[in-house]
Length: 61
Image 1: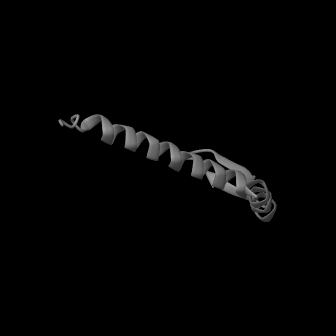
Image 2: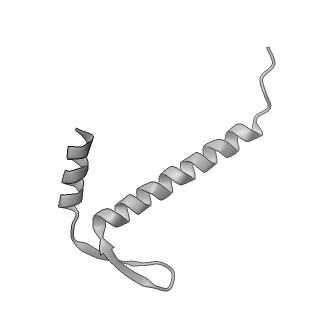
């Protein structure tokens, strides 16, 4: 089921888009840009969760 949804997502977002990365301008498929943005969001969430759990002192029983 997830594979079918992923394939629909890719085929619906095939057109190329121009993305400016500070100085260079990159042309890539929209699905690739969305996938990279999603991956960066997941990575940022994981980093923030690890930082928040490292700061909390252990619980005492």
